[in-house]
Length: 175
Image 1 (cartoon, helix red, strand yellow):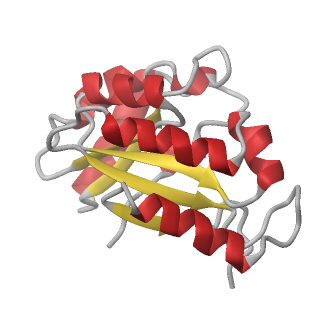
Image 2: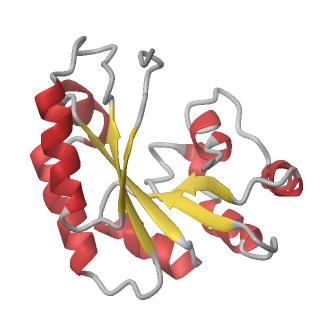
């Protein structure tokens, strides 16, 4: 199973903004190549990550591509609500197993993020999948080693209210 995350992960920290029309062309090319699940953007505050300011428009466009499951990332209830309004088929929630990374990335502890995802799960979301992604599951550039017990604890917590759980190699340490 492949979910291409380039349109979100590849652009969120880019120094230059990719024009919306170029994003659409890229996503269409990914779909034309046969990828059936694409994470097209994230619903984060545009002032913090300007590259994701057009995610609502990108989700709407991606929904017109036949056979594509449109995925968006959301770090909180407000982002989840925006993803639902835009029409995402699936929403991914990043919950870092690294406390240091979690505080730097979403300004919440892993425990606070689990509670945030729980709130989202209680919000009506008919037909929309929820995925919990355990970020820094294989290590962290800020914290270093991430104890396996922390990864398992976060994954088990997410499994209580998400449709699926993924282990994310956030910084390229898995081997």
